[in-house]
Length: 282
Image (cartoon, rainbow, N blue to C red; front, side):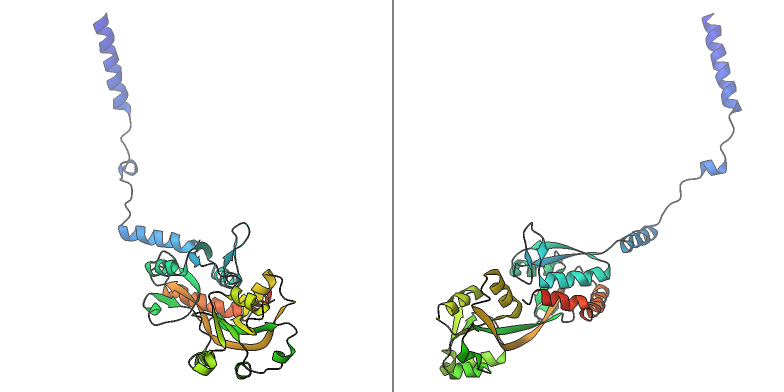
C-alpha cells in the first residue's frame, strides 16, 4: 500500500509538469543593460534639474557679514549676494571662519564663495572674480558741534591746521592718505589704532580730531553704540576701489560665473539694490 501511494504521487507530479506552458520569448529575455555613458548622461540630467548650491564663507565683519541673534547670517554683502544667487535659481549655505582659513578653503574648493574681496594677480591663479558689486568708500567723522572743522573742505585742510586724524593700522585708504603717511611732517597728524572702536573712543576723549572709517562700518558703529548725537560724518569721502565676489575655480564653473554676472547687473539696476544699501547707510 505504501509503495502504491508513493508511485501515484510521482505520476501525478509528472503529469502536472508536462501540462505547464513553455515560457515565451518575452519571459526569457534578460533585463536591458545601460552603458556607462548612458548612466552618466542620466546622472548629469538629474543634477542639472536640481537647484545649484554654493557654500559661502564669511568672516564676521558688521555690517557686511555677520551672524545675528539666533545665528541667522545677515549683513549688507550677504543680502546683496543672496539676491543675485536667488535670481540664478541657486541656494546658499554658510560657513564661518577667519579670512585666512576661508581663503585656503576656497583655494581647495571646500568653500565656493567669499565676499568683499580685492582682486590680485596671486588670487586670480585659483579664483574667479565677479564684476564689481559695490564701491569701497571711507568717510571722515568728527565730533558733533565742531564748527571749526565742519568748515574744512579737504583732508589737506585738516593736516595743514594741525588736526589729528585717527586711522586703523594696515588699512589702505588710497593714494592721498598714503602720500601724507609717506611725508614725515604730515604723517605725524595720523594716529594709528588696532581697531575702529578705538578711534571712536579717542575722538570722544579729544585725543584726536577726526577719524576715517568705512562708510557702512562707521554708520553701524554709531548706530550700535547710540553715538549719533555725538559723532557725525563730516562729508569728506575717499573711494578706495571696488569690492568683488571670489569664486573657487575648483568648484564653480565659468558658465556659473557668467550667469552670476548677468544676474548681478539686473539686481544692481533694480530698486532692491539701492534699498539694501540704504538699509545699512544709517
